[in-house]
Length: 122
Length: 155
Image 1: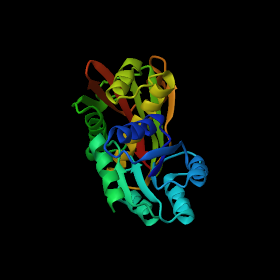
Image 2: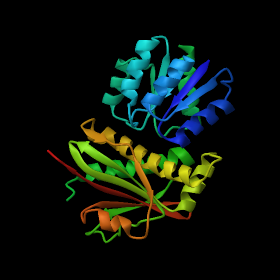
Image 3: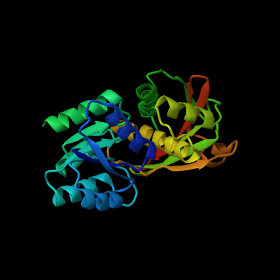
Image 4: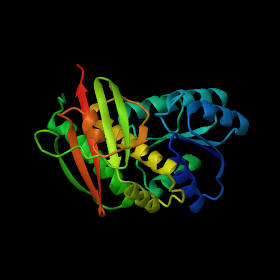
């Protein structure tokens, strides 16, 4: 499965890739990393990923608008929102736009893997 | 001037504690008080980030830490790149996570910006924050860092 990682923090992008690479989810292949919503859309069109991890607070285009755009382009895409915005309203907004899951920052390795397992099993 | 109540302040203390525990599996020491009344200086370290608030709140939330502490934190996170750019990225992400987590308490009317990060000189924070800012001193391992909450309700 092809994965696109979207987050304005380089350490978070790197951490997500490292955790998944070290995990038993060996079928996941990171095809791109983007630091804002605009860059994410460009990489999304080039790679048509099966899974996207999506930050919310980002420059240029935020994760809610980016999720909406990606789902309009490819409704089957699985988008996992990973955000520090831990209020219910933000999670609901992202889910309403088509995200399939929500993981709060800060997260442990185990929590990220569990969120991916849930996403890929559904 | 800050007009936050005790539970508002506690939400930031909880967010700081939670960040370090989730990332390092270690508890941090916390000391917190208002800048003026509590006599804690808004200690500035090598690297500082801040989040600007809008909506029902105005002001900023700052996180400042010594370079060596952030490098140690990245080592704990198994991040191989510990160059200056990554260190600044890390302090930005910490400020973002603390502010974002605190929004669980304040609600979606508290809008937060992307983080601004910079290398900072001694005493920089005291020159930019208001006297009624709330200072949270964090002790992780042998290192000290500071979170300064300089925000107020607009309604």
